[in-house]
Image (cartoon, rainbow, N blue to C red; front, side):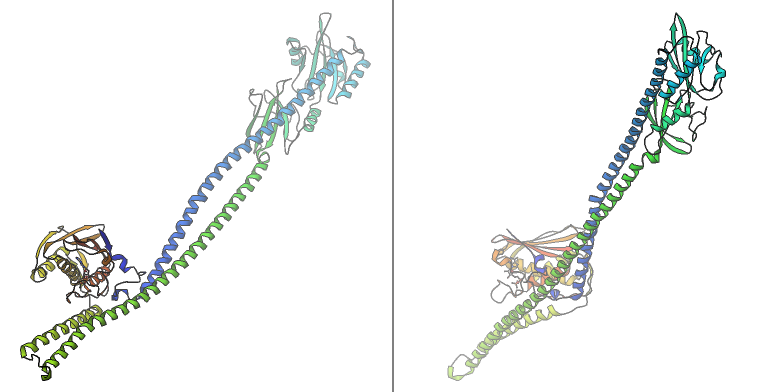
Amino acid sequence: MRVWDTSHLFNDAQPHQPATAEHVYDPADSQANLRQIRHHFKQLQTRLILGLILGFLLPNALLSAYFHFQFTHTLKESAKLNLAAVAESQKNTIDLYLQERVVNLYNLVHSKEFSLNPTQAQMENLLTGLKRLNDGFVDIGFFDPEGVQIAYAGPFSSLLGTDYSKEPWYRKLLTENQNYLISDVYTGFRNVPHFTIAIKQVFDNRTYVMRAALDPDKFYIFLRSINQGKEVESTLINHQGVYQVVDPGHSQLPGVNDHIPPASPPVGVEEYERGGQNMLVAYAWLKEHLWALLVMQPVSVAQSGMIKTRLVLTISLIVISLVISAVIYFTIKRLVDRARRMAEKGQQLQEMLAHASKLAAIGELAAGVAHEINNPLAIIMATSGVIRDMLNPEFELDHSPEAIYKELSVIDTAANRAKGITRKLQDMGKNRVPSVAECDVNALLGEVVDRLKKVELKSKHIEMSDHLVPDLPRIFAEPEPLRQVFANILINAADAIVDRGTITIATEAKEGMIWVTIADTGKGIPPENMQQIFNPFFTTKGGGKGTGLGLSIAASIVKYLGGTIRVNSIPGAGSSFTILLPINAPARKTTKHHNK
Ligand code: ADP
């Protein structure tokens, strides 16, 4: 079965179109087409740019945000780890420092110069030796088993003979298992801040004590000397938070640090506000004593490297994204512009082609008209010649009035045929004031069938069958051209039926269109004719019966109404013509219609 659809006939790019007024080049249409192309490419550009934003910028932003978060987290952690490492290394140095001081005292007691009743000179010598080892030592004292300082060297000579048995550090040293003690910083009998390193030694079952006082200022200077890092400060506190070194900037003995780090883990990092500034504080508890070393750095300084790197990264990312976006944007714009220009050029070429093909179609039409009119003219001329011969006595032909009437009627028929053709051409070109109305397609079909039943459908045994959908939506159109379409197709159906057959008419509404199918059980259309049946003057009906304008006119009317005609045919079995009419066709200002 061959299927033929008239829509292709009305594509302006087709060179062989029916020559109807509908195909005349229209500059307004051309402008509208250009506007449509521009609109289409603008939409395409917007879609591509939105695609770019969703497909590139959004994932890029999400990924950047994720990496930014991870990066910040890692860098914060590394700043903390870095400070904790500083704290631990300083703590080890302090531990070593204090251990060395304890060993210094031990060595003193076990030196050759030492005796249980040291003289003042011996004590002075011992202190000088100690100070050589470390200038933090202030003085030394030796205590008998009762806790009385029996020998002393240093600036507080009045302390010689003082009973220390009630002093907390002394009591702690005697009661604890450990052989040495390092006290917190205190003022004591001398009323000056210092801390004590003391060792106990048993001679003849009696416990003697040697102690040295150390200067916390010197200890602070030592602490400063091992500090590393920008704006890093270190201090020592005991387990009650009392400062053990004097930092003139931040603390005064016996100043208290309001934050005491947890006992476990022994090394850690905390973040809290101190003096109106957010500080990163690493702590490390000392091994030798229950002191905690605090290493502090303002958060802004600790993370300054990170903030700078983050800023550089963020700016680079934004710049890279902007550059890539700009490149993609301008590339899209350039490509879309180029495609639009090509489409516009293509459109113009199509219009020129359509215009040229219309001129060709007009030429074809003129040739067809000449041919169609020449035939009857030739018949008229030949017949008038015959009449002339009949009237010439030389030829002795039958010139009775009956014989002459017979020849005159041949002239009449030929003249009528020529008149018919010119009338149809006149109708085709006529501009008419449209009389658009709400059309009931079923009713129109009924009227046409009734009219045709009187003549065209009468002569043969044709059975009419219809499947008309009730409540078919009405369409806005001129009823007369529509009747013309149905009549032309119905007449063809009747002509195709040789003796007896059926014509089936069906209507339905779907896909926003009204579908009118007129099917016959006639002789069908040979495939080679399919392409031509809509061409003006194409006819297979001999004997002057056909003009070849019926389908051409029907197709131009249907096209005008915004629809198409589809044809199915099986040669020898029948044909079916389906007319598709839009239900909501845009109203037209003027119309042209034609009669078969
Ligand atoms: P005409 O009817 O004057 O020949 P048309 O344009 O109406 O002109 O039809 C052109 C040709 O299409 C017909 O001559 C015929 O060959 C073919 N045709 C149209 N309708 C049918 C049909 N239903 N069955 C077979 N052939 C058809």
